[in-house]
Image (cartoon, rainbow, N blue to C red; front, top):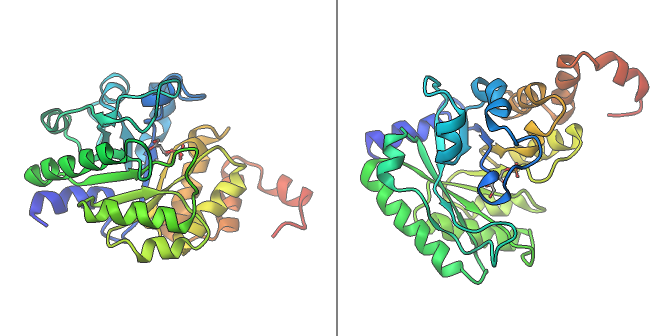
Length: 273
Ligand code: 5RP
């Protein structure tokens, strides 16, 4: 890697431990005003300094994040379809490389839809973006988006991750699954996981722990952080697993401690391990 590429990459995947806690707030690009992300400025503000990096579109970056922030930006540059449109997989590159440079992006993010009607188009988007990123030393995060018809199993996710890496993506975001280790082993670049739909905090921490234990380099998590009633405590607990090798239970205890409930919950659920 050239110096600029290495420097930006190390802003995303921390060189001290090879891990990352990326906060995803890009959901509005196809979902509109997602619950608890209706006002992105308010959602992002308390979490900004607790995330290793922030994943979002240029619109939300410009309108809702202070330019004085030092948190590295992962700029979502694909889109063009909505949840009520013809087909979510019909994406194009929405943001130019000039714009990404102007916004001082540390990484570019784009979705691919392997196996979908628009597979070819989204893979072509990825290849084009990697060419542009390589020219200017900006890494690319490929998001393996999963349509309703796609199984979230190791075979499918392993295929999608490997194709993204072969096309030159520097980091891949996918979903945790049974036999996730096979997905990681078949992919020559770091794999991070999305959190998915909101779970109970204990379950989201277990998912994080399982992914890290199975070889993930970190998380790109959204709803399980900012849809929690205690987003700050939740991101701090996730950080403990990713960067300090806490178990899920230790991280949950930490979460309860931060919200002042540790003793109450422990007494009430003494059988929990
Ligand atoms: C949507 C995305 C989201 O950023 C991703 O799904 C992470 O968010 P969550 O943890 O809420 O699933 O890339 O395409």
